[in-house]
Length: 108
Image 1 (tube, rainbow, N blue to C red):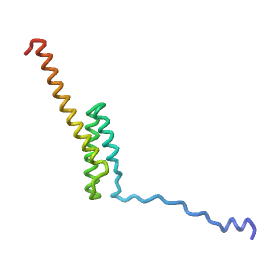
Image 2 (image 1 turned 90 degrees about the vertical axis):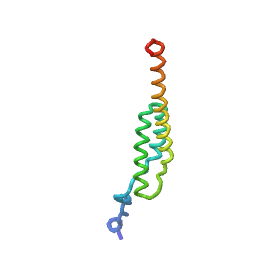
Image 3 (image 1 turned 180 degrees about the vertical axis):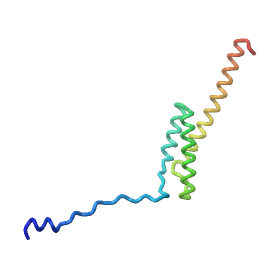
Image 4 (image 1 turned 120 degrees about the vertical axis):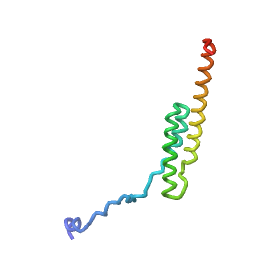
């Protein structure tokens, strides 16, 4: 056999194929959403609340599809609770400050 004939008979192996996605395949990014919601609660609570709500909906969707709780469901719940608590504290603080300033100005 000549070297030219040898290269003609060799075949390259097929390229590895990527796994096919099924209609029910879903990405579980609830851990990321939970961590971000907790972080943003202390930076800017409305963003933390929004991320926690999105994460909660995503966790419910994952539980409906797979029948198992999402990996970050606890983190998302913690972010949601922290957001609600800080929102309530902010509202109460605003009301208290308004009352104090009104009392200081003699309006009450």
